[in-house]
Amino acid sequence: MNRNKNLKTRLQLFAQTWNPDRVTVFEHKDGSIPEKHQTLILKEIMENSKVMQLAKYEEMDSKEKKFEYFAKGPGAYWVGEGEKIKTSKAQWLQVKMVAKKLGVIIPCSREFLHYKMSDFFEVMKPKIAEAFYKKFDAAAILDKENPFLHAVEKSVSATGNVVDGDLSYDHILELEDLLTNEDYDVNAFISTKKNRSMLRNSHRIENGVVVESLYDRANNTLDGHPMVEMKALDKGTIYAGDFDYMYYGIPYGMSYKISEEAQLSTLTNADGTPVNLYEQELVALRVTMDVGFMIVKDEAFAKLTCGGLGELKVTSAAGTETGDTKITVSPAVTSGNSYKYKTGEMLDVPVKGQNVKNWPVWDGSADIKAASGNDIVIAECDASYYVVNAGKATVVSAE
Image (tube, rainbow, N blue to C red; front, side, top):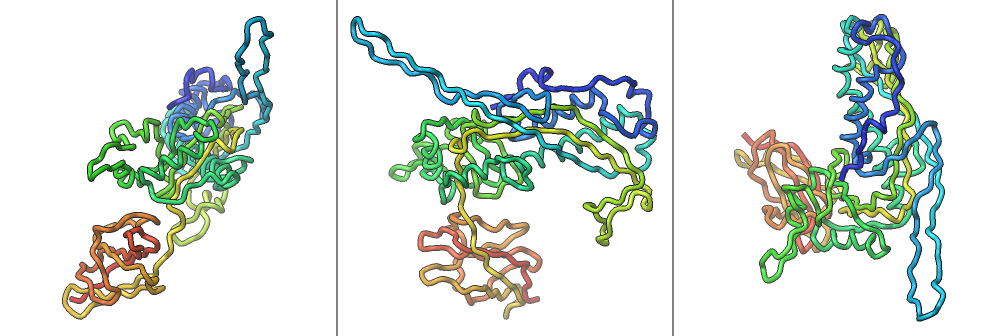
């Protein structure tokens, strides 16, 4: 689902009084980004932001915008012959959306000062766009460094619309039921690529045969609804929502400023010292934009999560025989649970509730055959092989 229609009518930009193809960065170190490049940057932000792909766009011409949204429709009634038809009103509620300033600072080489403005912003466009849409989505969805009153994570916490479990067929339907039982329409999901392996197993099985699958890999849909993927989302977590109750707006164009002398306290060198533009012959581009966001119905959103995974401290030392490693784990395994393990390169720690039935069994004391430098993951699972605790270490094996 993509609500970014009629993009030209949404990009509220300021006309330029100078030609960016003839002016260098050095000659024009601050102001509004050239109109053409503002349009392209905003287009890239809108096409990549998960919020902007799903939410409704509301035009804004100032920092605050009051508008009405449709909360409830008029009712129909059975009418007897000759009886007066009852009437009811549609319910519209007024809300106020407030825009917040979002900024990004990008250091670059001093050679950029001699670029034409149009060439400079062509190079910087993807960097600016990526910084903005990642920061905006993290705030509006995950409630991270969030200046807004609302976020999807805030909504599900406030309502308790949370299903605790793995990404199974039954749990996904339970997630949808949280909304549909309250008369909301699930029209999209927010997930992450890290969930794909688990979603491929979201089947309904009868007599050992798969009779229905919820995940459509080719179309990237879940139970027939579009699914957008957010890299910053934790593995094992999915949000469902009726995104008709989410809004965003962009009231102004983008402003920029070039600095040659600032010390950037939030950016550091390899030795941990702050980046000093003057001393290191660098320049920095600062770009700001305003964006508004709000959710008008907390109850229209829900979350499925495997919950917090207990952490195991795993250490590896050379084992008795060549190629063996001796593993120690703390805390000790819980009564009724057992250990499973996996070795290999660049392994992920499993999420809570992940089924590891097919992993090799470890008794908690025997040496394990594994190559030095590889990863080893130890998972503590319950009687049904669902992970409750896990940890990872780099293998040290006997030579």
